[in-house]
Image (tube, rainbow, N blue to C red):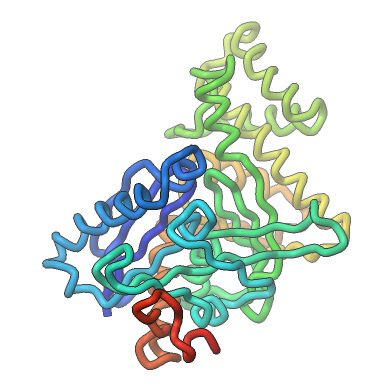
Length: 341
């Protein structure tokens, strides 16, 4: 079986060809939910997704090479192709596979398109401690599809919105914490006096500078620590790369306080920590988490998990439903069989 996996997020859209759990091709381009939120319409997003998918399909010999497409991320939000309701936590990959929302062939792509629902971690007593995700649940599905990867564990997914996701012993997403780390770092690098000093694009990370940023944020608060970045550059002549590491350490330290807060409120934070992806922010999280007394193991899982998770969910749905979720009828409404599921 072969699918297109589509991750259309806040700022970027990516398309992969995945055959029998192996990625064979990909395309990516800027553009996503933020563009729709800022004034573009869904027709623009349809064309954007279709254009990238068409390039991958052409190189594979055409659309007939694919059984379906599976899309995840902000593409399933109110600023995406179609809004899909979140599944309530706890939610396992099998629950996600059963809840894939089908769009008919011809609506967006010439092949059926299945949308992955996000996960809502609701806290009725305190909305400030609730959380939700769109996209990272598919990364978790990809992670848990790997041999020997079982819960309980804490999955860390850096990005525009960094996510800390707890997976319980039954392999279910049980809770999550989201921060604006990625968007904050981008804004600092583009729209503030720290432009030219702050970046997450570092070949090597000055860990001593990370430690100083961590200490400054915990001692003086995040916004003061970020201003200290400029003072270090001007008064100590700290190199720009070290200034960036200092700022990354401050932002990451502030993020990790959310986990400390969860523990203080009685939330069970798994000690087995798995960091997804690559890059400087992953290195900084790894460095700081390795010193946390509650973390029994901190390890990386580099590479792509989202497209592999999309493949895994499609394979589950195909196996359980004898071909996957039922497609909508000509009016766009799911069949009774699909709706009852």
